[in-house]
Image (tube, rainbow, N blue to C red; front, side, top):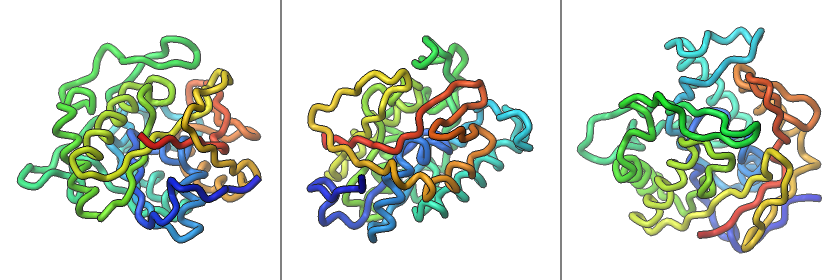
Length: 255
């Protein structure tokens, strides 16, 4: 099956995807971003953090988790993935042009997480004062709103309310994107991911975009994030061994 044009993207030429960490743009929405850019839509990706607390795939050659060198390494991975996807960026929340006017730049840090079940995440116990979830939502939303205005965005896309699998930074970005949408009058749409445990997602009001026949197009972007996961067939295997189906069939719901 191929991607079908729908009213959601019909006539839209500039779309912003708001994500929490490097690799989320590719794992959660890469197939959708790639289709949009291949069909002439200009896409920008704004990322909240550098994924500083992400564990590293053994043998990937990446700096160890928690080291300053990993931050720069993951920025490079994100830039490489965006080139494959055809999207503009990296842009980081808290830094111009994704910073509210009159405020000094700030760096939102990865909040960390813990596994509540084998497929559902929850807040960790040691998010620091610089963590994305420690910052006021209104401040982060003002930063994203500044980017939407500066970049003349016509649509902003981010996670559904549970962040897809519960990661606290994903959940926060959902609320940040919705507030930024409301501040600027930019339409908002949420991504409906297929749950990691394989249960059917809530499809009410969702349009599904099927790119299951275009995995080869997406593979170079997936491989760009080698510090975080490997690709095994049609699954991503994360640094901790968790296995996740590649999101090649992506749902989008306007809110």
